[in-house]
Amino acid sequence: MSTLLFTRLFTLLVICSVYLFVAADNLYHYIFICGGACIFLSNHFLLIKTKPPLIFCLIDIIVGFSFAFVFPGTGLYITLLSPVAVTFFLKGFKRRTVWSVLCFCIILWLIVLFRTYQLFGNEHVMDHCISMTFVVFCGVVGKLIRKLMEAQETTKQQYQELTDSHQALSAAHQELHLYAKQVEKLTAIHERNRMARDIHDTVGHKMTALLVQLQLLREWQKRDSQKAEQTVGVCEALSREALEEIRLSVRTLQAENSQPSFVETLKQLTEDFYQNARVASEIALNGDP
Image (cartoon, rainbow, N blue to C red; front, side, top):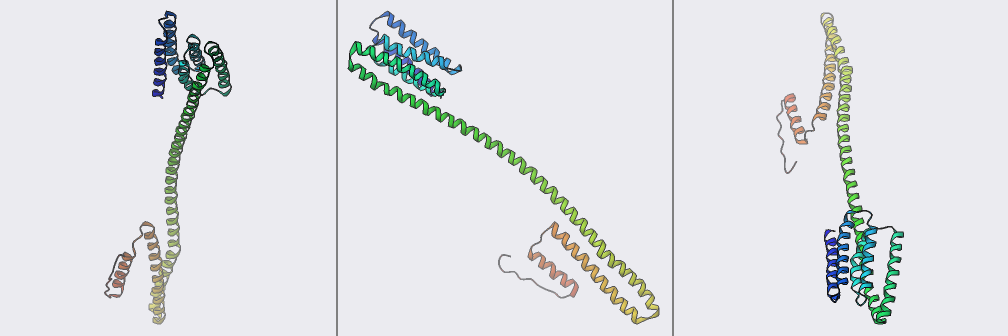
C-alpha cells in the first residue's frame, strides 16, 4: 500500500515537472504548474490522514482538468487523472457518490473535448478519447485493488475468529477432560464401594456361617465323630467359597489399577499352579508376544 501511494505522488509530480517544458517561458504558466504541484502534494497527505477524503479527490480532479484548459494543446492532463482515478476507486465510496463524481468528470471532459475541437479539430479530439481509456483502465485497477484489500481484511477477520474459536474449543476440551477425570474417579470410588458391600455381604456371610460351623464342630467332636466329619466338609466348602470370592474381588481391583499382559498373566498362573500342586512348569515363547 505504501508503494502504491509513493508511486501516485511520484507520477503527479513528474507530470507537473513535464508541464514546465510546455510552459514556453510564460510566468503565469509556471505559477500555475507550481501551484498545481503544491495542491497535489498537500492533497496526497490529506487523503491518507483525513476521513472522508471525497473533497480532496474532487480537488485533485478539478486541478487535473484545469491543466487541460490552461494547456489545451497537450493531453498530459489525462496522465494526471490516471493516479487520481486509482485513488478515487481505491477509497471505496458509495455507489451513489461514485456515479455522481463520474457524471461530473464526464461533463468536464466533454467541455475539454469541445474546446479542443474548436482550437485543433478532430485529430486532437480522437487522441484525447483514446488516451482517456487509460484513465478508465486505472479506475478499474483501483476498484480491483479495493476488492483485494477487502478480501484480505475479511480473510484476516475470519482467521482471527477461527483462532478465537479454536482457543475456546481448546479451553472447553480441557474442561471436558477434567470433568471426565472427575467422573472416572467418582465411578471408581462408586465401584469400589459396591465391591466392598459385595465382599461384606458374601464373604462376611460365609465367614459367619463358617464360624457357626466351627462352633458346631467343637460340640460334635465330643458327641458324634461322623457328624463332626461332615461338619469339617461343610467348613472346608465355606472356606473355599469365601476364598474364591476374595480372589475374584482382588482380581477385579487389580484389573482396574493395571492391565498386565497375557505373558505376565500366564507366568503368574504357572507360579500359582506350582505353589498349589508343586508341579514345575516352563513357558516357551517364539516370536513377538
